[in-house]
Image (cartoon, rainbow, N blue to C red; front, side, top):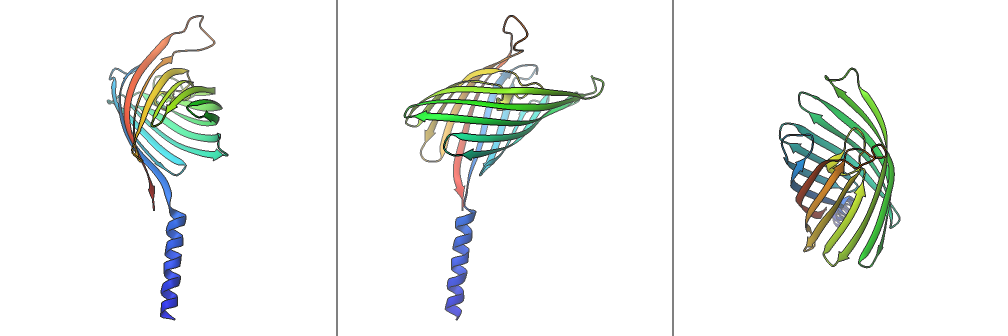
Length: 222
């Protein structure tokens, strides 16, 4: 009887560990960002467990960004993304946004093509304005990628760049380079520019630009 109990306990523990095994990733990045803030240097931290991720960035003592995201896959090409984010300007105010985006990515050997459609709801509060302001913005994404073994090159146009979320979603044009090292590590670089407005002015005005480099470790929790 004692041996049966031990065998049953081992079985339950092994089943628990196999069910609870989840993927995770953790990352750190640094960048030089020229925008409304006077301090260009910033640092980022990211932690992802299964389909949920938490991201934070500090840009001097002028801006603090936080974002919580859920991404659920449907089939091999479709992902539904829900995001809650906020940016805090110490002494000035803050804004917060909630987003939903439908994305689809197609991959053919070394070539990929993707798009995304969504919506952002935003709220802005500050002592400099009377009462809070509300916004409703469309989100449109498009990207094209080249993939050569561990190296990925991607050009994109997005209105939902993680590092450039604003009270009103604005277009960002950029490119990324990433290199997977071994089975767990990835280093990457990202360069982009942000547009000040769209569908309003006859000319395109660039309101900011940035370069970022980072490292991501991916593994499993068992």
